[in-house]
Amino acid sequence: MTTRRDGPPGRQTRRPGPGGDRFRPRPAGPEGDHVVLYGWHPVAQALANEGRRLHRLLATENAMVRLTEEIGQLRIDPELVRPSAINALLGPDAVHQGLYLEADPLPGPDLEDLPDDALLLALDQITDPHNVGAIVRTAAAFGVAGIITTARHSPTATGVLAKSASGGLEHVPLVVVRNLSEALIDLGKRGFTRIGLDSEAGTDLDTLGAKRPAVIVLGAEGKGLRQRTRDNCDVLARIPFRGEIRSINVSNAAAITLYALSVER
Image (cartoon, rainbow, N blue to C red; front, side, top):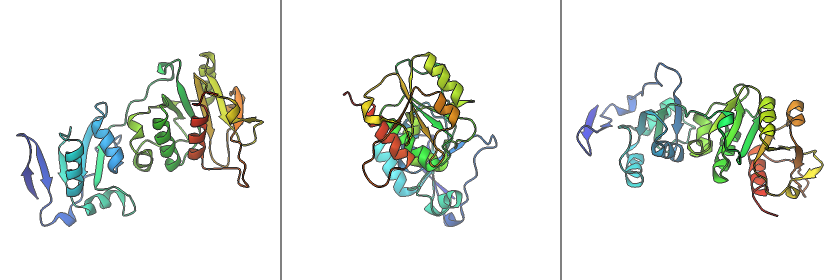
């Protein structure tokens, strides 16, 4: 493998030599707690986030050119590789756009550290990383202050979830709690309106208007909210569908709900 020196002294960009197709990047560090981010938006947002500790960046030549043009000086020395090297780590179906990053997970705040006037989301055993990632992306777009999840029955903030979040993980913290119902009780004591989304509820979502502080509680597709979760909501609301199909993907439901509760009536 040859090495090309770019930029200021001491910074190197590693370029694959003739045997580049056989290059096999090392796995995440022995600590076992590194997360993997891939794709343009997740990696670019992580590189721009000073709070994210970085360990290793792999980039193709085209991706490196784009990073240099749009970001400039990087916080980590990249390893220049061919796309096949990243495919070897992620598999051929991952849309990595020539970027692969190993980093520390972001620290999440405690529940009591969240602002008293916040808009929050709470996820009740939503386990699909594509759905959770899409919810994180939507939450970032609407300025949600935090997403409450449980230590069990929730995906980790890496890989597919991070790709689906499209950089949203750098802007919306995940608040991991042991028990969701107890977290909702604590938020209720702080004055949060706890709004559970339920397709069978008697209250239409568009009658609630903008509310702060509030926490929107979303259940898994199919199962919906668990009974104890429902019991700790102040109101159960439904999206008033007009068509023949009365249910949608939970990430789409999150987007509609956030918009409905952000509009002053």
